[in-house]
Image 1: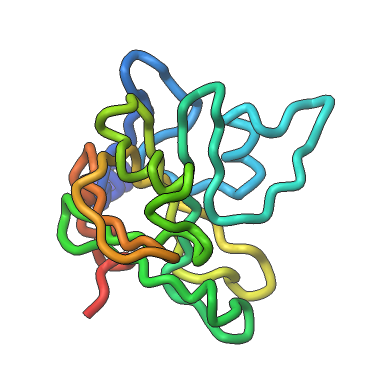
Image 2: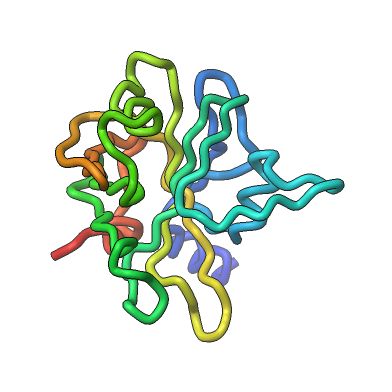
Length: 178
């Protein structure tokens, strides 16, 4: 019983199912997943077909869903200068994210992001601190859905998103830039 009491006191968050407008995804908020696990959960990978996706932004048109895979601390060894995006949490509710470097305000993708509140689109974020932990790819933490707040610039577009659920302390510690 003492061990259970000790473990109970060490719980820093309680995961909850990820859902948006009645659509429940087989993922939990603030839990960590491999890239492949996320793609399977979103239906991008199936038993019959494994997609060859390697980008940081994925649009699933059939779900009207943009999925962003964010690596917060990038090294010049692993990323080109055109992909050293400035992605970070501003506070518990706001997240600053930069689109891919070729995305302009006028592009179809840029317009989808900027007009997200009007077009019924959904934006889902996954973050990780570093690309690798030791020799393995780092898992991504699901930080949830977000809504467009504001933007500036073009190619890349800097966008401030408002998270649907406030970020807990253990996530803020990794995502905030000092």
